[in-house]
Image (cartoon, rainbow, N blue to C red; front, side, top):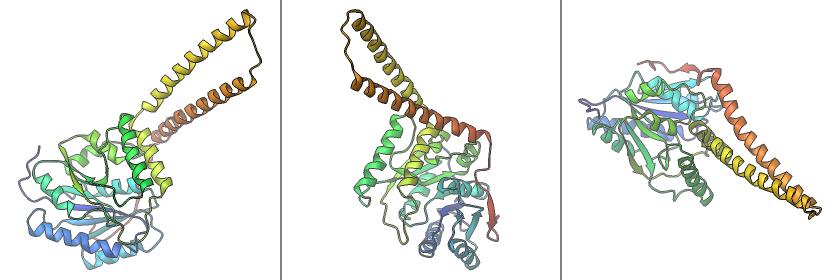
Length: 323
């Protein structure tokens, strides 16, 4: 473990997408938290809040520039287009990497408990390089969202992907963790699975998640399912192994069926079996199409990864963003 000898410089990394309603509410709270922690000498007074505008269509970027004009501790970068939450978080982390000692990534909507940052920084002072924010409960979620989210974490672990249960993207990371993360060239990102791969001493803290301060969630079911499938195919090849094993079982059963059919034909005990034949053909066809779809997803990702396209492109920055 590292042993911090002086207060670290903190960058709070906040991805934003169409957050004109909630940003004016949460931005002062981020600043107040920095002032609170710097007053007790947990972090440096020149710590910053870095907003990442992920190609918003509303006035989010205008609000960020106005905040920066009021106080240079508010800083911002703007992506050239919407690249998704994971790429926005990565953009903020990589831009803050050389300017900070530690970063804390947190969503803009105010659902994550701001006071948990104090515990994260304290854990850093104890020597931890990664501190994962873990939800203590999902009481504020609907039954459907709670069930699907918990099933997702369990499924990923079953498939061999190492992730922290009930952790999203609320975490503290040290500079050396981000230096190591920068060597991961993946285009399709699933950050909550990459950080455990990076290693370094880590721990967790629990916090209560609240309802959004304003506005609506930008993570509907379609995006949640896309993130889940991306996480599975990015971190594990176990689905392909499951297909292989299942294919072996189906082949064995089919081979037994062929022997049974031949024996029946030899002894003259054959009957017309249209229904059974149709069922078998449909079953085998469905298995083949599903298997080809999963394999095709992996091949498609290989194709896209070989292009080495940039994971984010910054079009604008606020003044003094390089400080």
